[in-house]
Amino acid sequence: MGSNRPSILVVDDEESLAKLYATVLSKDYDVGTAHGGKEALEKIDSETEVVLLDRRMPGTNGDEVLAEIREQDIDVRVGMITAVHPDSSIAEMEFDDYLIKPLESTEIQEAVEQLLALPNYDEQAQELFTIEKKKAVIEGGASRQELAGNEEYEHLVTRLEELEDEVSERIDIPEGDRN
Image (cartoon, rainbow, N blue to C red; front, side, top):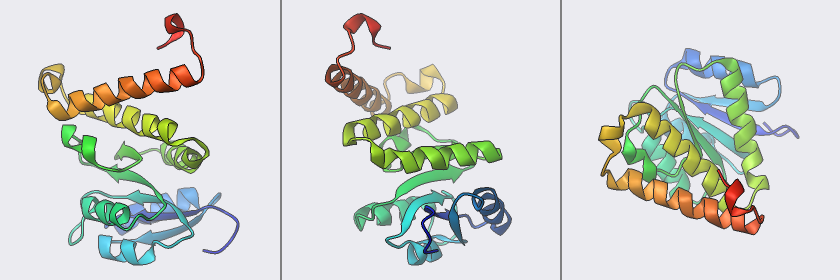
């Protein structure tokens, strides 16, 4: 990779999809591909800014790759791109964005732009972005009945409310204008 353009790694065991995403992004970014979790972990380096990570892969799956990235404290934004419709268990996963296949080219480009912009914000704003994404994805795949009383989901909603209050106080939004 090695240019001034942001470095993106697309990880998908379906080579045609990895190639498609790489082609879409290659106009604006240096893009590499990996076709499995082990290969992804070998290719992520200090220049990698965003990893678009398939969740279900044979061998080392996306959840394991994500856990390893976070355990090694690698400074990279991770967007899970997957056909796995999530449940509330994703509330504890440390990804930055979660996109459900199939995706349009514009969705991929917008997701990468948002992920690249995250480091420009403070930690609270980054966490707010991530939690809002998780909440929306969970709600998109579950009924209100399924979410009622779900501890993981309720914890997520509580943390989102706390962050919204903290951020709005910091930027001094009058109480009546919130939400």
